[in-house]
Image (cartoon, rainbow, N blue to C red; front, side, top):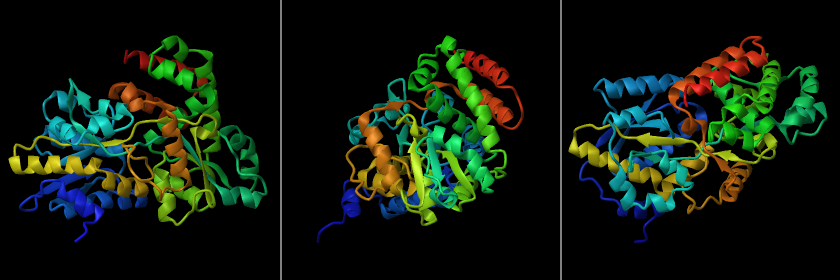
Length: 406
C-alpha cells in the first residue's frame, strides 16, 4: 500500500507505544491563528501523541508573563511558544529548558533551516533550545481595495501615496489607518515606519551596529515626525486587538493597517482574495525586505522521561516539511526551511518568498535588544501614540532607553 506523505513522515519518527499528552501553551487565538495551530495539533495527534491545547488570549504581552511564571513556579507545560530572540534566554540560562541539540542534529536543522539566524536565535553556548516554526515579518501595509475603488482613486502602491490619499479617505467617512490599542501594535507600526522613512541602512546602524549617533540623528528625527502623522491617521481607530483592526480593513471601514504577515490568516478566514479584495505591500511599498523574526517552541524540563521523549518528537514534527507547509499556509507566515513545496501560496505569500530568496533580510528587533529595552520603548511608544507628546521629546527618550541596553 502506498503511504501518504504524512504517513511516510511519521514512519521516519519513532512512534510511541501509547499516546503521551503534552500541554502546549501559545497566544494564537484569532480566527486565522486558531486555524493554523489546529494543523500542528492534528499532526501531533496523528503521530500517536496528544496535543492538549493551552491557548492564552490577549497576545504575547499577556501570555508571556503567565508562561514564565508557570515555568519558574514549578508548573511547567510540555511546550510553549515564544518569539525568536531573547524572550526565553533567562529561562535557558537557569537550566529550565530542554536541550534539543540531539533532535536538531538528527534532523539536520543546520542544513535545512533558512535563514540561519533563526536557529542562531535558538542557540545558547552552542546548544539548541527551541524549534523555529515560521518567519513572520511585521512591516506590511494591508489595504482595502474597495475603499479606494469606491472613492474612485487608484489603490496606493506605497506608504507615501497612502498618506497623500488619506484626506480623501477621511472625506468619504472612512478611517485612514486601523491601529489597535495593544502596546505591541504601536511598537510594530513604529518599526515599520522606521525602515520605510529612514531606510534599511539606518535601521541596521541603530539596531545591529548599535550606533547611538545615528539613533539620535536627523534620519530618526524624521521617523518620529512621521509617527506623529501616523497617530493622526489612526485617531478614529477605536479597537483593542490587532485582528479587530484587521477586520476594519476586511469590512472596508478602514483603508489600511500596518501589521505583520499573520494578517493574511484573517483575510483568508474571511474569504478575501489577495490581489483582488486586498493589497499587501511589504516594507510599506518603499523597501522590499523582511525582518526574519517569528515564532518558536521551547520545551520546559519536566523530569519525566516519557514526556521528554514526546517533547522531542513534537520538536522534530514542527520542523518537518509537511507540517511546515500545512501550518504556514494557514498562518500567513513563511516556512523556516527552503526545501518545501508552496505551490498553493497566495499573492502575498509569494511576495514574501521572493524577498526571502533575494536575501534582503534583517534580524527582528526581538533579536537585537534585550527584553528590558524593548519594554521601555514599547511603553514610550504607547504614550506617544496616545498623547500629543512632541516628536523631539519622544525621540530623545527613545535614544536614552536604547543606551541602557548597550
